Image (cartoon, rainbow, N blue to C red; front, side, top):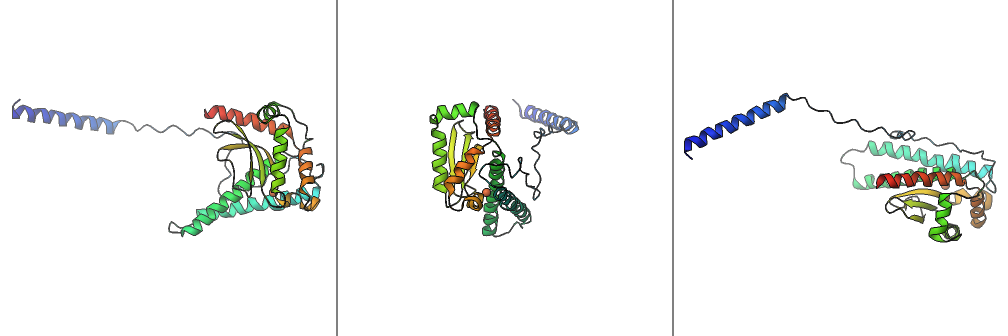
Length: 247
Ligand SMILES: [Fe+2]
């Protein structure tokens, strides 16, 4: 090929590229698809705008957990955590970019503490107000996976181990591998990384001291008498659907 042919070929290629670029510039910019809507009832409240959820039962209607106890727990401890979460979120949003690491780390830790406290308390209060009678797909599976009655014995033993201290006992569904998991947390933050809480028991002393002092075993008995099992089964059904959707 002669040098002239190469030059001509190069000129043609350059012209083609310029024409293509001009067409691309003239083409309308396609808009990104709209974000899918959030499920009903799952609209985030916004930073610093969490609000306590009222009790779904009459506070004087529980068996072995007094109105004074449950009201104090709900209105002071739980509502206090919600209030603190709001403050922490606002403080985090206001941090300058050059904020010292210890300040950021401290606030992030508190964000998790109060955020998990909100979630766990809402599950705890949400699974109270029933008769303790159990039936359904989860009840059947708990018997299959742990042995008849064994899961309750394990929950009781785990709660007893926390008695006199503080923490939570959670029966949850792992959204990682679909297994049912009984776990405990010595504070608010030791949660299963990718789990859906199904049955939640608050073992902080603020949950029973007014009624039972240090007698946490009596409180554990009372807890089992007040479980709203229909709520727990509905959580299991929802979590299984989420597990399926996650693939
Ligand atoms: Fe609590």
